[in-house]
Image 1: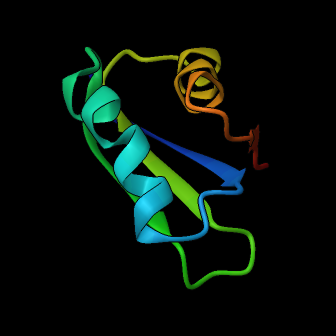
Image 2: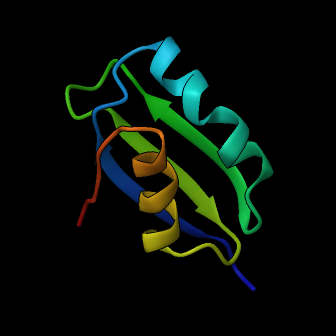
Length: 72
């Protein structure tokens, strides 16, 4: 199965915010790699998916009190 790259616009705007979702993303099944570009004005979360869905990624972000929306 080929990895799929998912992109989300978030409000994870600093290292402290990113650290709050880090353990969840590091331990989530179906994620190969993930990154948040806090220098981008849209705070882009990129997830290399090996099975995780966009909805599952959004639920992880929301469970920590942040917002994420799918980018086209």
